[in-house]
Each structure stands twice: as structure tokens, then as C-alpha cells.
Image (cartoon, rainbow, N blue to C red; front, side, top):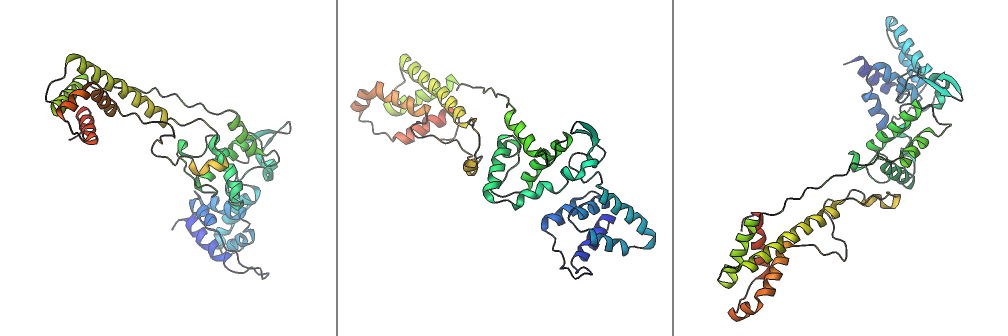
Length: 328
């Protein structure tokens, strides 16, 4: 067991006991325990315990140590009380800032700046308040599927904390703390200056003309018992090719996200669609179906004379599979 793990075990055991004054024991939250376990060093864990308000228990912990270790523990507690550099988000106590027109350090105004744990404070907000912050974080490019940070609307989770950690760290580095509404100010800068996403140029590969021709030959043989005439072959092949390109362009248009701000009311729908949705009034373009329609137009009298009785859906599928190479 490492020194950090020993400390966590002992301090969690101590806070379960009432203080000498008779105060009720503390019940640590799951987040506090997780934060302690994720601390890199024993000193970091002591800093967090001080931040949680466990100062008196830390004193008890120090008194329980061997005499030769008490000086080391006392030094660690002293660093925690002074605001050790690992407490602050994105900076340390000695970071130089310009504050109120005066060059100073973060540590001189330590209570004003964000420390580890502040990114979790939003957990206590009402769901509607959380949703409003989440919408702004998405629009700022700090939360959501585009930055690989999924979230639950109205619930302050791990990725929400990561986004807030980032904002608070930048605010600290900029010398803007609680009094200056630091994280809110930095968030507004993000919202006012959105990062432009690179435009993706879609490449289009037209269907193979020989494959289309062979499919058309098969259609005429199956339906009319003859080969297509030259003009029929060209007309149907051009029809398929033109509509294949239109179908591709429609697919790209439907899959391209609309550049609109997310609101608290639209969080539920954000990033939830895995397939493009055909909007009402928009007809999906099916190249093989449109080619078959033209075939019917130019051979209607011949089909009537031959008494053709075709399964349209089956024929449509055969044409498409023939052209795309899928099994029949």
C-alpha cells in the first residue's frame, strides 16, 4: 500500500468518528472519495482533504503518526493550509498575474481563484440550470459529440466537469477569479469567437458505365426478351447516372449538421440521430427506381402487347444489386 493509500484509508476512518466536541461524523460523498483516489501524491490528497473542510481530522491524523513522521506530516498540513500550488486549477500559488493593475501572484489572493473541486459545484444546481450551462458549453465547443464528450441533459457528469475544469483553469491563468465571474467571462469569449470547423470536400465516384449497361441488357432480356436499342441503352444509363449523383448529393446534404445554436430545450435531440432523417416533403432519390420508371415509359406498349406481369419491387432490387455488385 502506498503512502497516499495509507493516508486515504486513515482519514476516511477518522471522519466516521465523532469529533471530541461531540459533532456528528462526516459522510464523504462518492465524488470526494473518487477525487482522493485520483490524487497523484499523498500531498495532493492532504490538500483535497483540507479543501473538503476536514482540517480537524487532519490534525487528529497528524497526532496518530509516529514521532519521526510528525514533522513531515506537519509540513504537509502547513502547505495545505497555505494553499499549496496543486490546489489551484491550471496554475500554482506562485503564478504571476496582473490583478487590479498590480503585478502579484495567485497565492496572494488565493480565496478568489478556482481550486480543485470547484468544477463539481454545479452538481448542486437544479436540472434546468445545468441544462442552460450545458447548452452554452456545447455552443462553445467544450461539450458534446463533436469533441467526444457525451453528457446527460440536466445531470452534471464527468465530461461536464472536464469542460468546467478547462474554463476555470483558463480564468485562473488570466487572473480572473470568482469576483470577476472568471469562468463565465471565458465561456462568453468562446461563444463570441466560435472555432470554424474545416470544410470537408466530398468526393463522388460515379457508377461504372459497363456495369450499368450490363444491368440494362439483363432488364430488357428479362422483361421483353430482347436486347436494348442503342438509344434505349444510352437513355437509361444516363438516367441512372444522373440520379445516382443526385442521390449522393442529397445524402451529403442530409448528413451535414445544421449550424444552429443548441438551447436548453433542444439538448435531448443533440447528437441523438445516427441515421439521416428524410424531412417531410423531401423524397428520397432512388436511381434504380427512376431508371425503371423511364424503362416503363418507353416500353409501355411493348409490355402491354407481351402481357408482362412484373414484380416491380423485385425487379427494382435486381437492378440495384446488379449495379452495386450485391448478391441477387
